[in-house]
Image 1 (tube, helix red, strand yellow):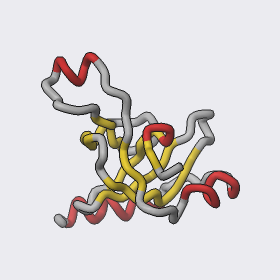
Image 2 (cartoon, helix red, strand yellow):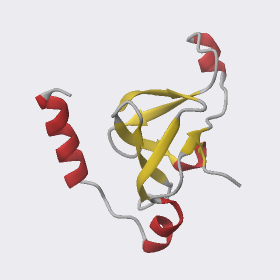
Image 3 (spheres, one colour):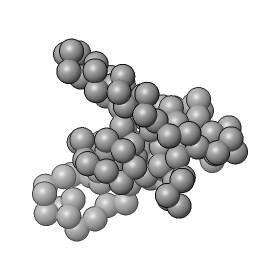
Length: 108
């Protein structure tokens, strides 16, 4: 991991908003969840073979990349302060970012 990436990660963690205690107790530190975004026409247009979920720098913010459906993630934080539930997740490859919480499958 480059110095710039580490600095970004540290700055991101320092600025994480806190979610309500109820939301955090339900999701944070839960078992590994899987991405489960709906398949769209745009996915077909861009040639994705399955649905993708945008991973963002902040809730509904700049897109850092995409995660294909079925990608395992761990929820580190939850924020619903803007009225929509977002999860800050860690991916096995070391990346982290915000995803729309309803597009995660965490079991029954």
